[in-house]
Image (cartoon, rainbow, N blue to C red; front, side, top):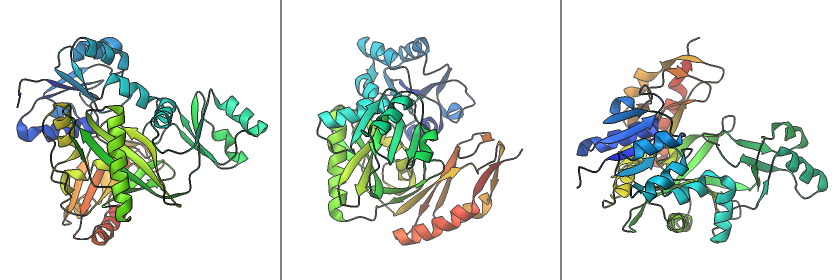
Length: 382
């Protein structure tokens, strides 16, 4: 292993923290760029540079000190990444792929061009054009509207079911998708290195908090037919190859009520749908991302135990210094692994941590997870 290779990560949030922790057993140095060393990754990075990953000059200066640059969030200055690539610095995911993925409209067009199954969609310049399309009869309710750029953690999505919901339309350029009759929402986290080696983690199923539009509950393995598992796995491999990505690619999928599997969207980084792998797989997604971007052999993705992952979200209507209720009680439970992100301030539906629950069977893991969900709460003390 080339211990001298400097790996820089744009972003110092919880994903950066878990990447740094994954590199710990190798004593491999990871460097971060973000606005404050007080962010979750700050105490765990070998080096932390204070600056904005959205700023061209900051990204360029940081990247020029690295051998390999990767990300923990999509919304970085990709123009600087293009320049770094021209200067011979490895950038994963590639800026070309990142530019497409950052724009949900371009992402959908990419699927169409590569004959990757996805839901029907239309692109609009703003909310006024959407309203005009409804009046003209070229767009029908219900539908999902997504901002083409800057959406993250449930933001930038509006579900429009009736005319009364039109007040929820988001401003600016948008993607509008047909509301698909969904049986289950699924995800496959895939990894690929420069050698072209691909490894996929076992299929997971997800349940969302409708109010926050965030994953609240995840189960692995997914409760679907073997044929669905195989089709989802092959589709994820096809997508990561089409984007020519090195590193991780989380491929979020819809299983429709008619049995079709459609690509919803992707994330070229460690993803919420892969957090459980820290405890439930031989190789974690964070370990795998480091392996992939450094062009090292990929690790085994074998599932060692059924698992449930719960996001620990800030309670509704609660803002202030974070207070944890039921922490010690859950910590005493066998097979319960609590990950706190170190965010000092709790806000409604803010991701404050996650909990992985292992069980001998999926049913046992779910039963234990429901106990944890009811007991472990985080709120802000006003």
